[in-house]
Image (cartoon, rainbow, N blue to C red; front, side, top):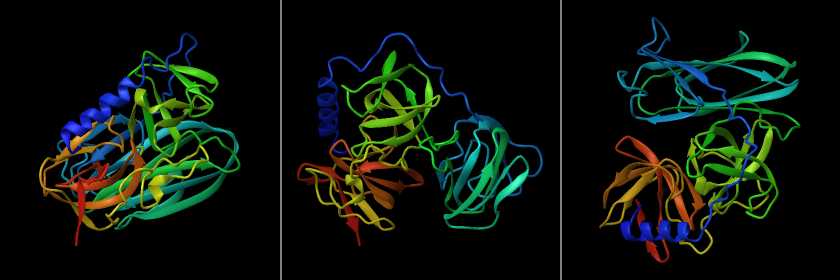
Amino acid sequence: MKKGIIAALVLITSLLAVVTPDLGGIGVARADTTLWTAEYFNNPSLSGPAAVIRQEYTPWIDWGYNAPVPGLSADNFSVRWTSGQTFSAGTYTISVRADDGVRVSMNGTVLINEFHGATGQTYTSTFVLGAGYYTTVIEYYESSLNAFMQFSISKQGSSDPGPITSATATVTNASVLNVRSQPSPTSQVLTRIRRNETYYVVGRNASSTWWQLNVNGTIGWVNGRYVALHNASGVPVTDGSSDPGQGNQCPSGLPSRLVVGGRGRVTPGLPNNLRAQPSVWSWRVGQIPGTGVFDVINGPVCANGMAWWHVRYNGVTGWTPEGQGTTYWLEPVW
């Protein structure tokens, strides 16, 4: 993030404010073990033997203009994800958004069949399931240019987000972490989770400082300082507060000047970091130099007192902050 010294001060100040992590003792729930088998093909038709087969937590990935895995081209590739989960009886809705084609089936029944060129259209299917074990298969292909796949499933009439969600959180900065009833360090402890355990994310608070997890059916909140997030850019605000990231300004922040679909640049001088999620604690995935021009994909999201924008620079996508105090680090390019 720009500028380097200010970013370091923000992080140090935030960390010093917490003397002791929100840690607990014994009684830890088992981490969610649901995985998807991902088969990557070096062609757009899922034909022949897969070039790469690996386990992934979620079929929600934005490759941008890059190759999905080493050894494959950035265009004309395809992927098949397969996973089995136990569902409770009820009415479910699947939603997928893809560039380019996508097809979804459960136990061999095709629910969504949009295997054609596309530029990010969203497709949905609502259906009824009896209680039981189901195998879900998602097939995707990329033609050229931008490439991404987003998948989610929800159960109607239930706060249970379902067994499949788009975002995960892994405990990284605590040996044992409390999962609380509300996004507050004084609220009731519902359960505890351990370092390196991974759970699905189902919500966040408006400032993205607390994250709501599904811990084996227990829905609770953890402090964002102690988890690493994956694919969390689309997680909704679920604590009943308004999301300042949906307006034009973060509280005590600068009025946002960028526009989704437009272009921007880093102000002359020091670079801005690109991070995997809108947070100063998220992984750095790249950097935009001073005067570097980027495409604006989504935003703003308010976190750490700053407006964050999802951008693409030289084929790398990530989140970068607009500024702090009275200083803009990003500016629009008209």
